[in-house]
Image 1 (cartoon, rainbow, N blue to C red):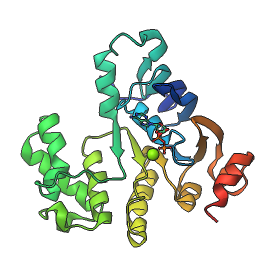
Image 2: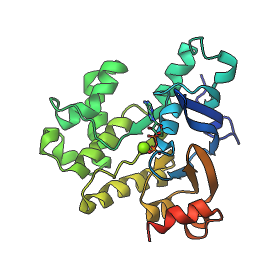
Image 3: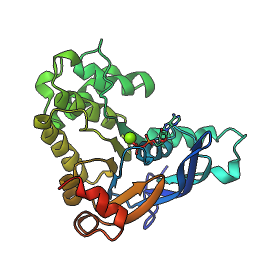
Length: 259
Ligand code: ADP
Ligand code: MG
């Protein structure tokens, strides 16, 4: 089976996505495209729906309406209807293609660093242990932590834990990576080492959506910046333009807090 992506089509296509929690409408017809190899930074105040949007894209949350395509897998939530189960195969495919890194590192505390990275491939993908461990070691090398392979996560700094979390997500061979405030819980001195790994990943051509409050990173690494407020996309555009010369009053007001 060919693994080729549809040429010219975005790698991630979110169209008119809607999500409510009870009466609270959290996403109002949100649309967003990320081309293959593209990096989109998602910015906005707390409560604007950024995490919910990421969680809808990897289907940790079920959207109420609209559609989602990741690579070649499409889910049309309007067509399926809210009462019916989503098609299991599409669900599994999209979940398998999306790697996610959270603010809290969520490493398994009872496993060594390398076992954290290898466990998904071994237990979920059924890859032979030796192969998975070899691959995990290469991924740890990529995030600069090969020398900590046998350490317990408790022995690592926050920045190192987050780099392990990135290696662990990459071990599942995702086609897209979603970062939800990956550096927000870190001491300021440790933010740079994690952003630097994310930048390398972007340079290597990974398709990424990055929720971040690091505006310099958004400006310099992202291709596009999307500003959300109250569940709406208020403004989107070329990263430098949105960060340095936003058009919308709400974007200007939000960015004032970062100068
Ligand atoms: P952000 O990541 O931009 O801070 P969130 O997506 O976390 O925003 O939250 C957007 C809104 O959705 C908030 O009003 C939040 O309280 C609400 N929300 C998020 N997750 C849930 C949930 N599981 N149940 C109920 N409300 C939720
Ligand atoms: Mg959030």
